[in-house]
Amino acid sequence: MKKILSTGMLLLLATSALAGESGASLFANNCAVCHGESGKGGVGVPLALPDFQRQVSDEFLYTTIRMGRPGRVMPAFTRLSDEEVHKIIDYIRTLSNVKKPEHDPTPIHGNVEHGKQLFAQNCAVCHGDHGQGGKGTGVTFSRPRDLPILAPALNNAGFLAAATDSMIKHTLLEGREGTPMNPFKNKKVSDQDINDIVSYVRSFQKDLKPMQSANESLTMTAQANDTLENVVENIKRAAVGRNFRIIRVQYLDDGFQPEDKVSKKEVIVYFCNFDLLNTALAIDPRVGLFLPCQVTAYEQNGVVKVTSINPKRLSHLFNNNELDKLCDQMYQMYKDILDEATL
Image (cartoon, rainbow, N blue to C red):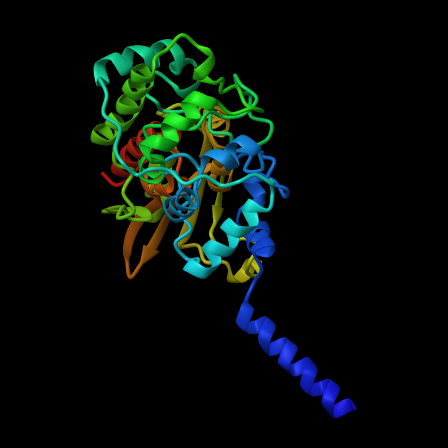
């Protein structure tokens, strides 16, 4: 009996291993942190809303998971297998007991200029004047917002690749109960008016802006023709000259090595501009992982170098368009400090 039971258990374990994770566990591990454990929303859109489920096809969900929403926090899940993505989609369908749609892939043709006027009158207040999405990023539950949920960006490569024209039209006509999206079928607009708005939204594809490049190096480095001590003083002076306050100066090994073994050839200068800090945290609290600002000076084989993180690469990692301008500004500040410190 023991042998039979053991064999049965082994077969069960083998079957489970082959089956891999369930859709529920895949959702919990990859989606719930933003969309909520039961899909009722949070940082991400509420997936359990019946109207959402009626309007989005499995193909829309698949492309969304694969491509994400560039610049809008939703990442692209490229590491998941096709089987895992389909398991997640099947699980999402269990969150609401409604029939999933099948959208006609045929493009809709309308008057883009008229659609632009209608969009400005009816859609821009939530989706932005250029379809850039609701104000803020929704990175935390405490983010101040103008609306209960963050209106999605429509001029987004991920959205435009996932959504068919017929899906956009259906959403406009029916609205989305449980969100500020009201149905156009209750307004005095014609079917052609709806087609014009759809055509205007589709026209965003030709004006999509590229994301910060993933090819940007992780660090910025410059070489100095001076002593380590002088370079450290130059870093401090350059930072203070740009309205930063010096927080502390320490050796890289401090706290990791006994005091008598700490290397004196690797020095970190920490500094902060509190106005800039508050602005950055308001845009995306995740930047706190890389604050306060810091520049490291070190001597290697008789040569002194200075190095810092590259804010442009961080902007790409965060996937947040609102952060790009600040990261560009920070990049220039770091570059100026490194240049001045190594003159």
